[in-house]
Amino acid sequence: MNHLNKVIVFYFLFVQFHIGYSQLNPQIFKPQVALGEIVDKQLSELSGIINAKQSSYFWVHNDSGDDARVYLINKKGKLVCTYELESIRVKDCEDIGRVMIKGKSFLILADIGDNRARRKNIKLHIFPEPVYKDGDQLVSIPKDDIRTVTLRYKDGPRDAEALFVDPTDHQLYIVSKRDFQSTVYTATVFSNSKKNYSILTPVQKLPFTFVTSADISPSGDAILIKNLTQIFYWKRRRGGSIEQTLSQKPVSIPYEIESQGEAIAFGLEGEGFYTVSERPFGLKSYLYFFEKR
Figure 1: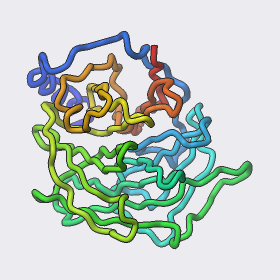
Figure 2: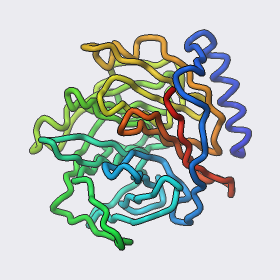
Figure 3: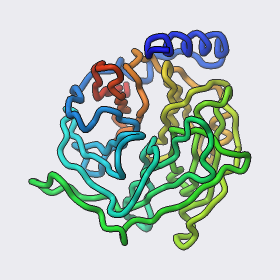
Figure 4: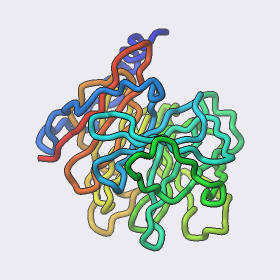
C-alpha cells in the first residue's frame, strides 16, 4: 500500500471512530506556517524534534536506518551540526525528549520503535544537552556521559513513537502507536540515577490510534499528541495528574496533513508549537510553526 493510500485509510478509520471525541478549535493556535524546507540528505526520515536550549535551534533525529546521532537544525530547517553518541548502537529511534535534573538539561534519545512488537526490551539514551559552538559540524558525545536505561512493557512488547517527561515530577510517559486504542504507559526513571532498568505500566487508553509523537509544555500545563491526521491538545489543570488530564476531552487543532508527520514539540517560551515530517517517496518536508494566539 503506498503512502497516499495509507493516509486515506487511516483518516477514514479515524473519522469513523472519533466523531464527537474532540472539538475542532481554531482559536488556540494560528494556522501552521512553513519556516523552512528540510533539504539535507542526512535528514530524510525525521521522527523526533525538540527545541534546543539555545532557542534559535532544534534537536532532531532520524528513525530506523540511522546510527545513534542527533542533529541540530536552525529555524529555517538547515542542518547546523551533527552529534554522534559514542559506542551506542540503536535499532529504531522514534522520539526525543528533555528532562531537567538538578537544574541541568538532559536530552533523551528514545530507541522505542518496534513495528512488529517483538522487542523484549527498549532503550533510552540520556546525555547532557550539548552546547553548540560556532564552527562545529561534527561532535562526539563521550560514552561516559551517556546513561542508557532499559525498559520493558508490563503487558508485552509494543510499537511506540511518542515520549515525554512530566517536568513537575520527572515521570516518564510513552504512548503506543499501533494498538486500536493507543495506550499511555509510565515508568519511574529519573528519581534514581543508578537504576537503569524499569517496567512500563499502562495507565490510560486513548480513543484513537497510530500516535506518532507527543510533547508536554515546559511548565507541564499542556499536552500535545498527534497521529498521522490529527493533533490533540489538552490543557492541564493545576494539580491535575497526567492520567486525569488525558481522560478529558481534548481540543483538535486545525492541521494540514504533512507528507508523513512524525514529530511535534512545544516552544520553550510558550510561543506555540512546531512539527516536522519524514520525506517519503521524495515528497517535501518542512519545519512548521503553529503560533499561539
